[in-house]
Length: 143
Length: 73
Image (cartoon, rainbow over all chains, first blue to last red; front, side, top):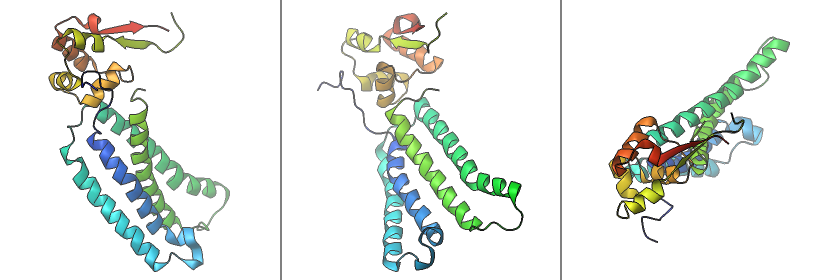
């Protein structure tokens, strides 16, 4: 197809980062919250190592893959801003809301692992950020 | 006054062809955005900033209203 009529373009730097960043943040979320997710049985050592290796590979991909991309423009920055907003709202909902709601009805330390929840939430918020970027590029960057 | 979301239409594709089959990459380079943004603008999925809109009109050598149109739905 002639380039003048072509309707597809190479992926932006942000999209390439998100493609690697999404599995990386999900992997780190599992590793950081493994006690909460797997309980007493725990995450098998080989599985933990495999996830860690995949996360490091994704991190390297995040650094290397976007190198030859076009420079970010105003649309990229708008998408980044919207994705940041969604991730921040997610973080507020998951990291703060459970504690605040519980404090309204009970006192004393929460029955759940608050630190583990906060760590997992932070990594999931990162996953929301990268996932939002991929979704927003597929739809539109308008308010 | 319409109740729906207003639509910003554009004639970028037509103007590209009238400007000697200018490619999306050439236009992107002229107005300082990525090719992906030019495609999104052409398809009406992205409304650019006023600055990029003016640069687009300048790239074609036409007034702004010849490139973009505002339609109340």
